[in-house]
Image (cartoon, rainbow, N blue to C red; front, side, top):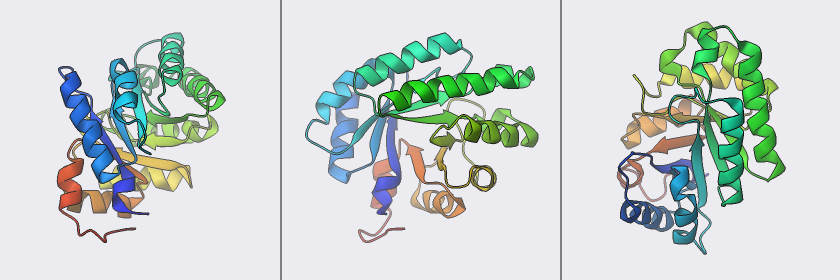
Length: 221
């Protein structure tokens, strides 16, 4: 697979303007990234900016804390999918994990997986690994497999840390052939390469253009 097809070109800042989203989509078109990842407010605009291209629209649910209710997340996902999002990045309920409420964590993921899969969209679950213990990361990955989500993802990029090689390797070792998305702090080609070598099948980054420019045009995996 070509390197650019690993990338979810991302802009999730609170002050992102429509003009910046348009630029994001233009860059994604030019470099043929897999998707753009935007806040749900911009799903319809991104879809219109990407009309005629193969770039998908991804959006976030329960972002960035993951602490909204299961019902709220379901509504967010249903709305986003109805408006054209083909990928949903949901934040796991870290609060429930810390409270030992693992059944809720499982149900939360399963509920969103059902919503997405019924409409032909995929679900990525953001673990926010920087806030979890090693045991919690393992358990969360095991439950993600049980919930039949499509990807586990390291980070929102809005917490105390981003993706690490160690976390990507750990996640890959647990989820088998499921997708693994590394996100947060990936700002150069060398880091991106290392994440893929560790087992990432998707990269979330706002530095996508800089990263692909740092590679030769023939780079692929």
